[in-house]
Length: 148
Image 1: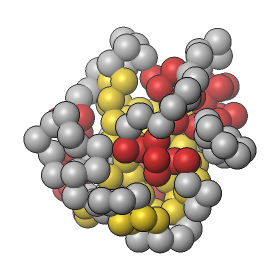
Image 2: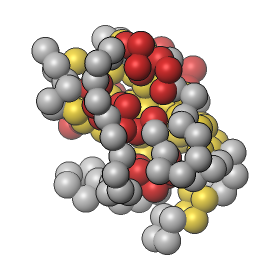
Image 3: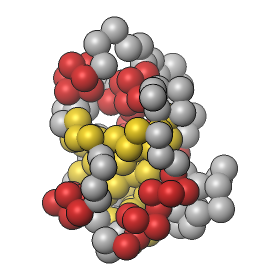
């Protein structure tokens, strides 16, 4: 099994205005999917076009040696979030073989609150894929593999 759903653990240190998305500081969780494999997707998220990579890059490279993940342009909503200086990607929680649709209710069930309506959800019926949730609460989601 190569891919599935994942949660990115992001610390946002200052308010961020991304046009239609205004995001307050805090511990954020982004829900995404990587059906063809986690390695390239996570490495792409951990790199910035400008500035240093995120702290999680070394852990992602160690977990997925040989994987390639390049960021040639800002494409997804999460790309714009992670490009911000005030955002720090600190890790990920991987759910092999699971879908975003299956993981979303579990995430909401442990208290996740929508951080930006519509963020990352243009290809699904979800209200958002970006949530406020203390990262310590993620231990309440069984079945995930930590990379940090």
